[in-house]
Image 1: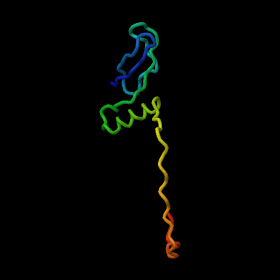
Image 2 (image 1 turned 135 degrees about the horizontal axis):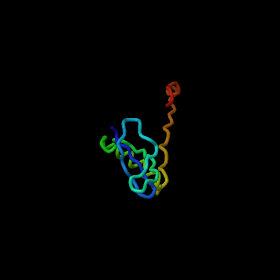
Image 3 (image 1 turned 180 degrees about the vertical axis):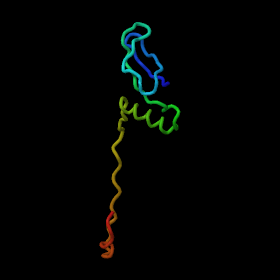
Image 4 (image 1 turned 45 degrees about the vertical axis):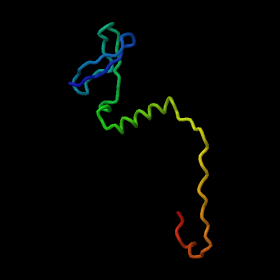
Length: 93
């Protein structure tokens, strides 16, 4: 049996047990008998490595709070020019 989450508009969240992959999209709410729609979430993410959790947090945060640039990027490094004719035969990066 798997635990599935449902959300009622007036009563809030509720959980129900159903056999794996047989959960309906809507169930009657236990509090008001109106239809509660199934809610899909990220399963098992809080049990994973902290780097994955930090990446998800920063991704969600960047959607609503983008970083603001406070300065222009620095100048590019100057390209070293050589006058040695043998250097012309070397591959360029």
